[in-house]
Length: 124
Image 1: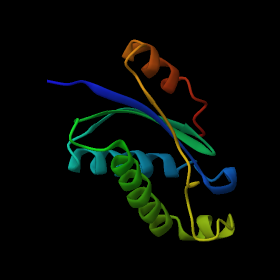
Image 2: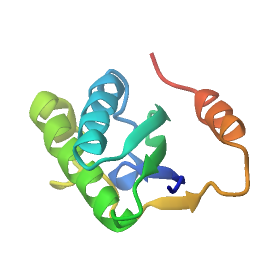
Image 3: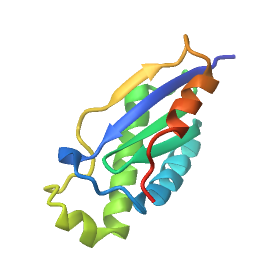
């Protein structure tokens, strides 16, 4: 048995503050993608220009594959559902920045990380 957890942060392209009502769709999409890969999205929150995820994933799944799938599918879904908003932000065809932050959560208790993610200043 294994317990791999990662805290991931994805930033929008050019840090454009476009995430507001999109966060609900983004969270739902990322939960579905994670479930399809055998992972579990334990916590999700975000601000206008980035999202935080706490995700548990199996050791057979490369973190880079998980990240690429999460970002790719969510970007397609958000561009599809919010086409006008994404086009007005002039993100040049990309929703997420190509980089991401990932850190394993082996040292800190998961409750502390969940609390940190919950305290993000989520736009309404």
